[in-house]
Length: 189
Image (cartoon, rainbow, N blue to C red):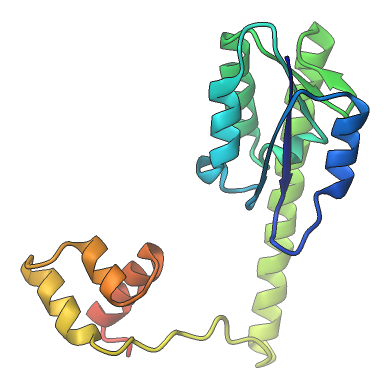
């Protein structure tokens, strides 16, 4: 069976180009999502595709960065597919993991992708540092503590409610709740 994996990194991006390529190859089933490439652990459709794939299937992607931007994660994905005897084909890189050359090229390209990503992050940090020195960047604005924060925080600390109930009552995401807890506990109001 031919399986396709399509991903764009943000909600405002369009996946039409990738889907068009999948049509050219008569892909039987497509798994599609909009999620950052650095968060491979959160890729529900990617996990579902790997679970769904059976021996002899081939997974098609537009390019390896659609799977992940981490060499380690890419090699882990390829290893999972290999254990199931599933091949991986990338259109852009023109690589098929079923061949020895394909396996070698896959490792090299994954390393180059990760290197590029790390360089982008380093340049971003340098730019932010320069902007801060010039007074042009102050970072993300801190969210105000929601109404009822203190009472719900105290209930959570005492153990009368669980964390999930606390962030739900405050209408916060889990990560935002814990960031606010950290701010509250160090006195950053």
